[in-house]
Image (tube, rainbow, N blue to C red; front, side):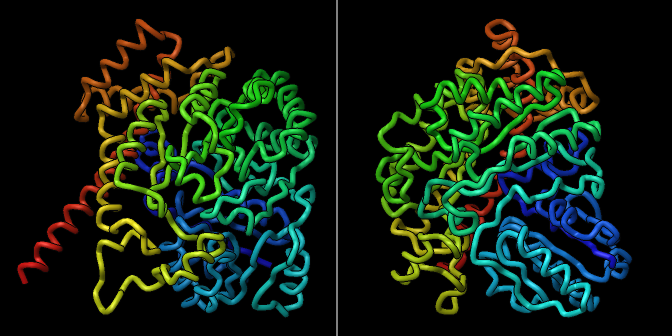
Length: 513
């Protein structure tokens, strides 16, 4: 049996750091962990090829070679996925599709031959048997969450690790919180399921033996969803493993703000080599947090919590949302002020999006506020083009405010000021510096050339470098490396500014017609 596994190309989003990756000599941020895990579940004697379209071109001969084509996608790959499905269907090959894009939006992909909805550990044996018997069904799903201690080590041999900036692995699935806009509880459950210490060490070993000596991202829904097990054995095992190998990996993950409440947990995480965490802050406005059910962010000083985490040796990246019903026009400046004061360099600010499997979807559907067809009353309303729901705030005001937030926080002045604010708070764990590799030198050269010479706002860059030399010389690598993110983030801000310009001229043209 010949199986072709395809990972579609990402659209231009916060996570798709194409320009930064290019200057570092990389093709993508992370490998397709889901597909690599699926590949490891397939029979050993089956032939397998994996094409990550973020790293290489999908050729006609790849498709012609396969007996079955497997696709895994998330919402940020939808545009490429739709075109990919059409292309494969024209070839006549049988498509088996899974991943969150298909699980949450299966109604849009009913023309696909086979859909795998949900997690695959307990589905794959039946699917494989049906493939062997030529009796494959339309839909495969289960009504329970599988034991992830059965999950195999990903089939890393199917990819070229050098293409990627960081490797990713998974310790747990599920989140104890149930934010209204989030679909994680529906997809992965509210009780975190966690792998054994032996299992996660085996996964770390698997990439270590391949020669990987860089970042490892734990892709958990909430890494600290089960603090007790994490502190009892998981982190202790990782600390021991890292120490024995002199810390070959720099670790990162995503988790909740209540990390700030547990000094012991933070100490163990930094001891294990964690250096960066992504936190869903969403909004500094309490009314918005109450509205979306993010109760663990309420009744705390969010700014102090962020600084406490930074003081313990973590770089904090964070997500922010605009478009809650409770948002007033003051929310835009409040977001800007909070982001600047917090020193969160990589701040992902997005418009509220309604996921089909979220509680928010249920509420807005009952209120008849979902936009399922952007062509309303025969007019393509550009002010709603970035939204999939009707907001309480005037749509044009919301989108203009959103674009202003992006263009402000990713202006050179604000971006470099945030780096300096972060470096004042940051107290990294003292470890032996990593071995200098070629991509480090590329990053240094690119930082000096693009930010220090070529780009506008270079005086802010040199001001930061000089400040770091005299005030925080030990953090100079961060002062050189963090500015590279601006090469990506400014493109998002410019795109929004262009959209604003386009929309304004569209309105003017319509009024003159």
